[in-house]
Length: 170
Image (cartoon, rainbow, N blue to C red; front, side, top):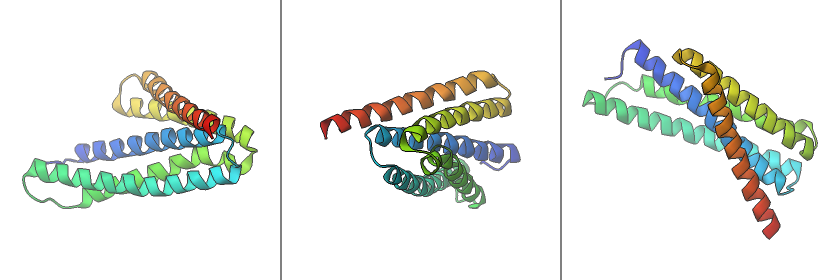
């Protein structure tokens, strides 16, 4: 059964890192893809805000349901909901806050400038998230940072390829 404080902390750390990483990667990938398709800045911002709100809630619910099922399975009976609820809240908050990082440039800059600033901020945030998670795990922090940076870069590239491809076809 998941119940020891260290095991709960692992659940919370996992939810925080997963929520922040997924938000940064999916948000900047989406924003980059629609920006490269030359969609107006206000539409890009609206699309990103909707994505962040819906996905933060969806990720939180998914975290809650999966952690609750895993705890019930491990205990072979129903267990209190506190840990899955807190895990879901951590997922929601980390997703929501991390998504703001690549989104806010689209309110502050022209679309072309926001495109670059958003990507740079998201990649820096991914690298820092990797550093922090590596330090918590007491393993290669720089290696973790670079890995997150590369994964984010690939997602941005995919978003840009899809946005550019579909824009050409429109």
